[in-house]
Image 1: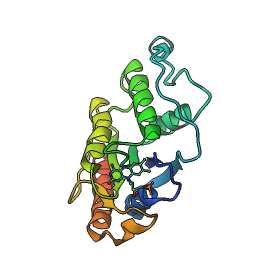
Image 2: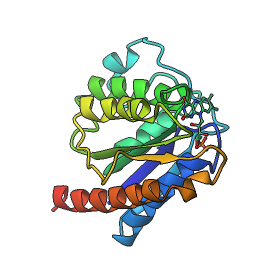
Image 3: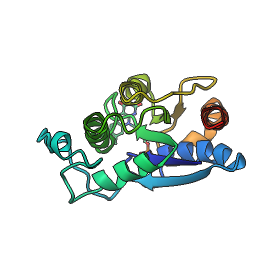
Length: 191
Ligand SMILES: Cc1cc2nc3c(=O)[nH]c(=O)nc-3n(C[C@H](O)[C@H](O)[C@H](O)COP(=O)(O)O)c2cc1C
């Protein structure tokens, strides 16, 4: 089994990446293969609303000049998907929003390519708006018929400068429990 984590932060190796790595670490302990993809420094465009995905039905977006199809293909191949975002003005980053929009339409155009995969959101924030960003990511999982495990709190870590989330003990514990619950659920789904 494999879980792919996609980090929508503009900062490579930042707080969102740190939080995602805690979740991935628990999955690896359960012998689940993992991969972290960072969108930082990469190009990803928003949905063009061209609807070509609906006519082509090839599990791809019509835009071939950026990271969109790279991520969609990895998500399509994985058993579990983690989407990570920093909180930007009380919402998700434009990079992860671009991916969510395109992946959502590609999924619908192809009969639900993410149906019954396991998915979870991870959010970093300095102070406020994280729950709104968390909700935004969960909208994607739920409309694509994915199964979402919970944790001991909503999956948020608090910190501003890179590494500050390490001091958020409850946030780190939340990520570890999320990883444990995701591994448990993946094994049940694939039993
Ligand atoms: C454009 C921008 C907007 C931000 N807006 C918020 C916000 O609304 N609420 C908040 O708590 N933090 C906000 N932050 C702070 C980041 O969410 C915080 O530093 C987070 O840890 C960054 O994660 P990263 O290291 O993965 O990039 C903002 C940061 C940037 C660059």
